[in-house]
Amino acid sequence: MFLAVGLGAGALVPGGAWAAEQVRCEGTATGHFEPGLSFTHPRDTHFMGHHEYTTCASADGSVRVATLYEDTFLEDALCTVAPSPTTATLVWPDETSSLLTLNGVEMDFDFDTLSHILITAGFVTSGHYAGSRVRYVTVFPLVDQLVGCALPWGLVLQRGTTTLTIEDP
Image (cartoon, rainbow, N blue to C red):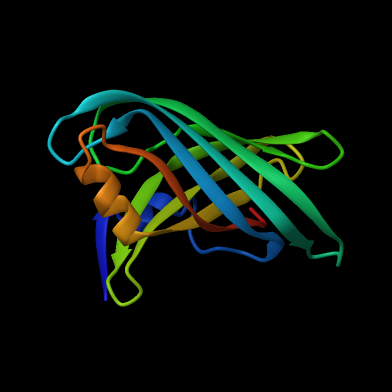
């Protein structure tokens, strides 16, 4: 069972249905909040996200790695609101990068697997795959989220798995 919170799914998918996949990456995600998030006390918070994609398979058959960086300031942030960076940078092994412009984050909960799910979508605005659509889905253990948000200092660290896709415009 899913509970969706945040933007409507249509708001996340830029320009209609998704087209052919160019790249699909799998890896791990870490998010840091300074200061931590709580359920009841809104705080201005600095969010830094770091995704290590250990396997990125391309449509041409090549496989490589990539790292995604998010960095944004959140005003009056709570645990019940997903961090919504407006840009992110995807760095490739040859030290080149792709700048991502993001439309927002949809937050879901899967109570069957006890997971907290963040779905982020947007476009590649420069670098490799410029003009393509991008979407990444990050899954965090719900118990870790709940415990972190209930602590006096709040949720300061989250770790989970992530899948990123880059698709034709």
